[in-house]
Length: 116
Image (cartoon, rainbow, N blue to C red; front, side, top):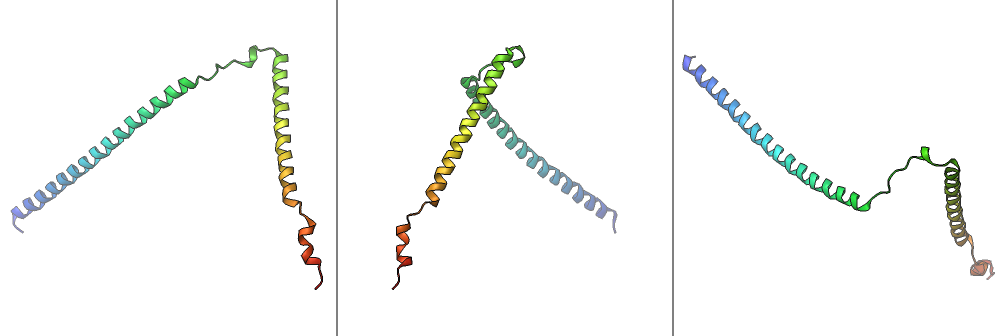
């Protein structure tokens, strides 16, 4: 094999490598630009959400450590009573639905008991 064939082989390999590196650079650049666009869209959405959160204005947090024990007990009892009332209302609604499903008029089945 002549000496210049090695130069051609290595030249083709180097050009192929450079072409591949250029292709990967373009691919990486496009991916980076797409990611940057998504990050800017995310930043805009986060800004909208933070403005919305400020508009809602959650009540400030007050630690229970500094409240009176009797007030805390009253609040707890009130919350328990509210939960019990809600639970009883759900139970009553469930019983009402069950009665509607199981009640049947016996006269609608009279044709089954008639003899022909």
